[in-house]
Structure formats: structure tokens, C-alpha cells
Image (cartoon, rainbow, N blue to C red; front, side):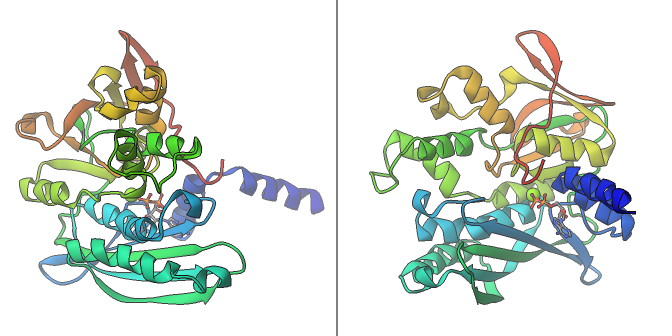
Length: 327
Ligand code: ADP
Ligand code: MG
């Protein structure tokens, strides 16, 4: 019996967070789990979108590498990005904080909320609740946001079809480059308007792509969509897995952030664009008939199976090497 338990717990330890969630979904038949937001029926014309994100100090952020205002901004931005990923419009949020006593006694919380509200006001998001608790050691942030999509029109991760073109908004790798600069000791108290700061700002001042999401919702052309939080390779992997398809992307078509090459070797720039994460751009697919006037850069196409990258004329498998909390 003891041996049996040990085997079971070893197997449990070996699953990553995505496998765990997938197991949970199957075991308890949870059909609303697995996309960027849960889609719940609201009324005859509208569906509700709800998303939750947790950020833990020294895992998801470091206090010395950000400001309270940027952190408040990002806490909301990551949730708004998930609503964008469904082609939705946000309208409310709840924010819960576990705060160490030392931080509570500073101006941290006022500055954090001022950053949060600056973004909330930009997108008409109302704070409708939350919770505050004392944390023993590290700051924990739990962000929940809600929004709406027209009935049956939320853009799901499932829906990509073989032959669809793959698009991405904006540029890739900037957030990862910014993080590397912070790791190298870039001081965020220095002038934030110089060149290096642009990459750091991509990491700290996430922009949720709600305008493009809205446009895609109106155009009705996206067959699947996700936001790039873990990294292009992993998030493309999520689309392919739930859509039951493969993908081929082209390294020379990737919109790699222009400024990366000022600080990093070109191979590292590509790595950051493929696997870096936290760009919070939208990754979506469009059927080949609808390729005119798509708001994004075409980076490849959906195939029957396997995820591949074409680089220097060679086609290679592309592993999902984005961020994971547990491996
Ligand atoms: P995202 O990066 O888009 O925020 P996640 O990878 O965090 O998405 O989550 C993927 C899916 O798994 C979402 O539908 C989310 O609601 C669900 N999920 C994540 N963690 C849990 C959990 N602990 N319990 C139930 N569902 C979860
Ligand atoms: Mg997401």
C-alpha cells in the first residue's frame, strides 16, 4: 500500500500545471475550464467572460524591479489581456491582496492602487470588490476581471483549422528582453524615456490589446485566439492542442521587437520572441479566404499536426518552451 501511494504521488509531482488543469477538467467534467476566460450565459444577446490571475512576489514579479504603480497596472492588465483574448470587452474587476505587514506600513498600497485605477479608467473598468489579508512574507495579488462578448461570439482557443493563417499583433520578445535588462541590473529609477527603458516598459507596463480584440470581434474573421502570456511557442501549442491541429511558423516572418538587437545576439532575440512570454500580444488564426486587412503580422499557417518552425530554409520541430510554474 505504501509503495502504491508513493507511485501515485510521484506521478502527481511529474505533471506540469497545464496537465494538472487538463486532468481536473476531465476528472470532474468541467467544460468551462481551459480557455483564457470562462464563458457563461448572461442573457439572450450577451455572454459573460470571467478570468482570474494570481501574481506572487519573487515568482511572478520582484518588488525591486518594478514600482508600485507599474505593479498595480500589470495586475489588472494581465486580466484585461485574457478578456481581449476572447474578443471581449471588460467592465468590472475584483482585486485581492495578501500583504506583508512591513509593506502595509508604507505608501506601497496607495501607489499600487493609483497604477491599477489609471488603467481601469482608460478602459472603463469598475472595481466591484476584492479582499485584503496579511501575508507572512511575500506579496500575493489575485486579480479577477469580468466582461462581455456578443452571444456565442467569444473567440475560443479551439477553432483553428488546417490551412488557416496564423497572425500575431504588435511585436514579440520585448517583455523578455526587458526582464533580462532588469536581471542585468538596469535601474528603473533612471530615465525611463531612453532606449533601454522601452524594453523594460514592455515588461512592466503591459498593454492589453483590447482595441484589436474589439476590431477582430467586429470583423468576425478569427477562428481561434489566445493572448501570449507564457510565450509564442507555448501559447501556439495551446491553440493547436485544443483545436486538434498543427502549425508551421516562419522565423523570418516573426515581428521581433526592433530594439532587442541593440542589446542581444540575434539568436537570443529569436529565442525571446519564441519562448519569452509576457508580451501580451494576441495570437490568432484566420481562414485563408479572409487574409485581406487583418490587424496583425502573418507568421505562418495551421497544418494537420506537429508544430514546426522554418528557419534558414530548414524545417524543425518547435517545442513549447514557454514559461511554466512547475515542470
Ligand atoms: P492564462 O494564461 O490565459 O491566464 P492559465 O494558463 O492561467 O491561462 O489557465 C488556463 C485555464 O485553466 C483557464 O481556463 C483557467 O481558468 C484554468 N485554471 C487555471 N488554474 C486553475 C485552477 N486552479 N482551477 C481551475 N481552473 C484553473
Ligand atoms: Mg490568456
